[in-house]
Image (cartoon, rainbow, N blue to C red; front, side, top):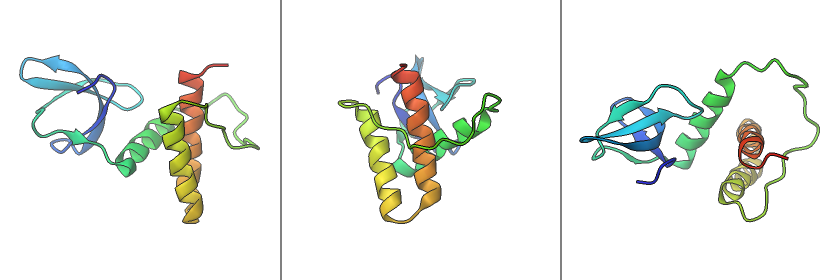
Length: 121
C-alpha cells in the first residue's frame, strides 16, 4: 500500500488515506484530514471512483468557507501530466455526459481543491 492511497474500510464504512502500518494494523486518516484510525489491512480495498468522489466532497463540505466569492464563473482546468487532475476531469466529463450536474459540480470542487493544494499558482 502506498502512502496517500484512498482505501475503503468496511469496518467503519469510511474511505481513508493510507498513512502507515502500526504493528498488525494499517493507519488511515480521513480524506481532508483528521484523526487517524486503525484498520485491518486484510479487509481494506481500493476505494471506488464513487467512494473517492463522495469522501472528497464530504471533506470539502465539512470545511466552513468564509473567504468568498462563492460563485466562480469558469470551471477549473486540469494541469497537464497530472494523473489526479486527469482523473477528476474524467469524472467531470462523465457527469456532464450523463447530465448529472450535481456530480459535475462535485468534481469541479474537488479539482479546484486539488489544484490549490498540489499546484499552487
